[in-house]
Length: 236
Image 1 (cartoon, rainbow, N blue to C red):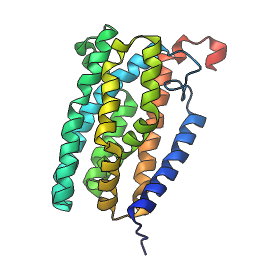
Image 2 (image 1 turned 180 degrees about the vertical axis):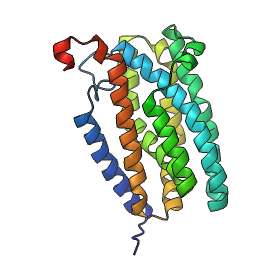
Image 3 (image 1 turned 90 degrees about the horizontal axis):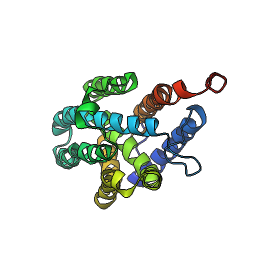
Image 4 (image 1 turned 90 degrees about the vertical axis):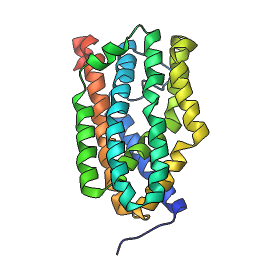
């Protein structure tokens, strides 16, 4: 028999799961704490490439969000209204990061001619296939994962970049953090996920899959930007 839980219990279960996943990330992925940690300078190549891939991922997940909306309309029309409003807001977030990259002299054309990471493509493929198999929930869990992590770490990343570069270099990222806070995006997505899943914890494997794909992404980011510049003895 499937155990269904109320939203408070569901929230605690989600938080406990994602705490385990972030600890796994920190303990297994090289450079894992680099973006948010205050005790070391930003590696500029790592930071900029991460911002580029974030923009590309925003645009690609706009498609999976739309695919999820088409499924959610049949699953729960009232939830689809909320999801639709959220995804429209997310559509504009690429502009915020593009504005910051201009301060680093990275033009929009350069962003979109930069090859996509294999890990990002694998994430998008996973979301597309999972939405076709399970309905809209995988896209919602992707947003839940991203918003949970953003609530905990994005402000630190912005502050670190502001100190190293300038406030002009993080205007977009800062606006993004403030936007999510004002609109309480995590709580909105948590409520949608709870209602869609009917409080069923057996769907949490999707969150674990998404977390694993993000670990793959950060490992690829490290290998592409940091590893090539390390002395041989450090890289081994």
